[in-house]
Length: 188
Length: 219
Image 1: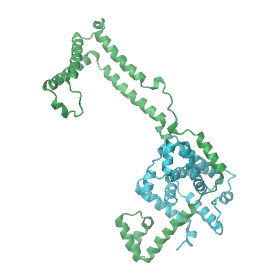
Image 2: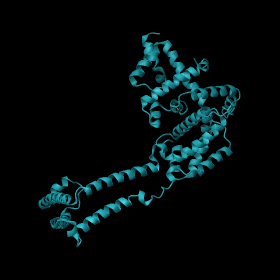
Image 3: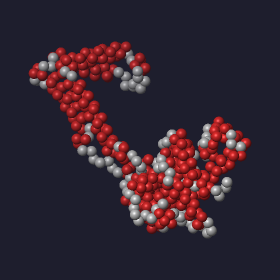
Image 4: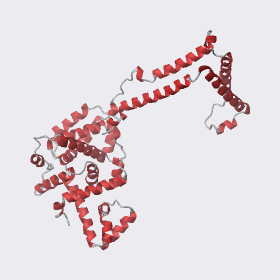
């Protein structure tokens, strides 16, 4: 039976480097995919995904093994992407063409028929999430990517449950406005 | 749409996430079952959740080379919990404080008991009293039962003389402290306060340097 993420994280904390290597192999594609959606820039996403694991390894002692490792790693990813996004906004780089960035937002597994539609959806949702205020992005990801309950998000982020509710409520309103046209065909 | 609908519209996003308390949850469940407009609205919020989750799901293609590059970077990293603490320099350690305290005690004893004690102005009574209290306290300490786990309740079981002597020693110690204070003046107490302050500052500084400062907390 493969070792659980939480057990691997504990082994890594005790100095077992192979355990953390295994976690990197397990989660790199997922973290990279998320970074692409959050940053909208393939090159920056690679750097962010690398930096996420370096930062996670450096700060592994902060991880509480009673909680889900994937959720913790996702929080590290989201915070890093938010700070990278802020830095990029302050220093816009001329070679980062929007079209070029969006072209690289697709997920790896190119589906047979709905690949284009999926790429479009992915790009639009990524753009909508990027346009959220920084405070709302991590909680939004924990809810929609990890499927955590509000209480679990509060426990993980250290925010009061009431604050989590407000952040998610506002995030959803914002996303609904941004994605209104896509929702027309979404099971209404 | 009636007034009841207005009241619950803002709660629908939380309702579809199952994040409401039991009372509100039951109220909305009943309302949504009866009101087609609100049911449609709840379905829209649920559709948004599905849409966002689908848009954010999926993994990116990652070659073995990329993963190896990440692993190389991780291996070059020394995490906080594996970094040996930096050697503490003498003047930043507790050693100076301890040395200062020992020096103060030594100076006091020299002032009281050296052949030149009369030059320091220490009253002879103080010297004798102090010696007597130290000797008697040693006897008293020997008489006190070793097991003090149930203190102070257990003290009731001590022999009457021991308790009586302990009280006597306490009175004597208070009188001695008063006498010593009249001899030395308030300087030792000021030094004690300064030592405590310095110890606190040293501790706070070391804690900050070891990574508890505000600039090192962000993950």
